[in-house]
Image 1 (cartoon, helix red, strand yellow):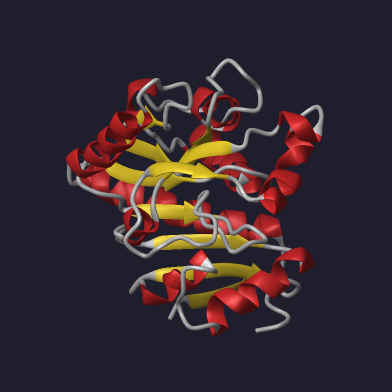
Image 2 (tube, rainbow, N blue to C red):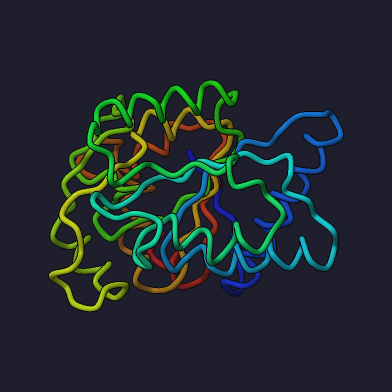
Length: 246
C-alpha cells in the first residue's frame, strides 16, 4: 500500500520531492552512476520543476549524470509545438539546467511506426538500467501517464486512445477543445510499476475523489492508479484537500 506524505502546500510538496531527487542525484553521482528519472507533465509538477531549477542555480545541483524518460506524448505533435510534452519539458526544465539533451527521452508522437517506437522506448529504459524514481500525477479518470481505463497491469508502452474526460481536462492547454489529440503514446502500467520508487503528486480538492478510489478500491483495470497499491516503494504526496476523503 502506498505511503502518504501530507504537505501544507504545493510548494512544500515540491520542495520535499525535489530535495529527495537532489539527494538521489548526489548519491548516484558519487558512485559514478547516472540517476534514471521518470518524469510527468501537466500543471501539478510545475512547482517541482521550478524547485529543481532553483537547486541547480542556487545550490549547484548538476544534472549531467541524470537520464530522463517522460511518461507520454501526444500523437501527432512534435517538439516545436507548444502543446507537446517535449516543448513543455524543454521550457520548464531541460533548457534551464545542465542536463545533456541526448539524455532526455520523450516518446515520438510523430513516429510513422508506433509499434517500433514503443518497443524501442521500452528497450531504452532497460538499457539505461531501469527507472530509479518515477514522478506521477493522477487524472480524474484514474489514469497514470495516459493509461486510460481500462489498462491492464501488464500493459507496456503503447499507443492509446484518450478518454473524452481526459481530453476535456487537457483542453486548457490548447487554443480550443477540438485541438486536443485523440491519441497518445504512454508508458504502460507494468513499465511504471518496475520503477524502483514512485512519487505521486496530487494536490487540491479536485483530486480528493480519485485519490480515495486509488487508495481504497481493490486494484483493477478500470482505475489504473489502483495498481500502485502493489508497488513496494510508492508515496502519495498530498495536501489536506486532496487527502480529505481518505
